[in-house]
Length: 100
Image (cartoon, rainbow, N blue to C red; front, side, top):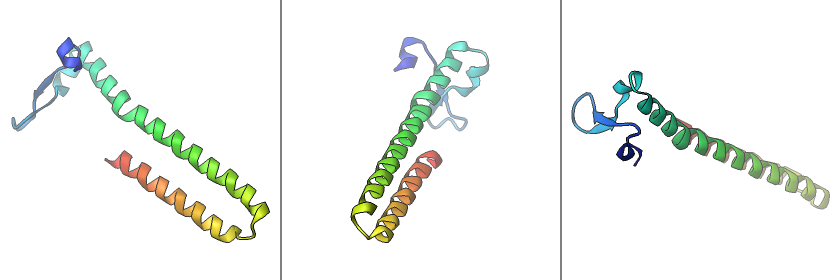
């Protein structure tokens, strides 16, 4: 929507098959630089920060509940395996997002 209001622009890809962000005008146009920075921030930095803080909060909550369960239950070994599995799943999801 931003290119409709004059911020950023689209241009043909190198092979001319479809359109993409006009990367070549970035050097000469301040509007295109702002648009690319906004896309980087809103489509990568904000979701990355949100995912990181959410997974850290989840892992802290699991760790705290595990500590309180250890005093009640004697199955700390089974619980630590679940913690490790949750940490691995969170790392895989986050890594997959960054790779994509």
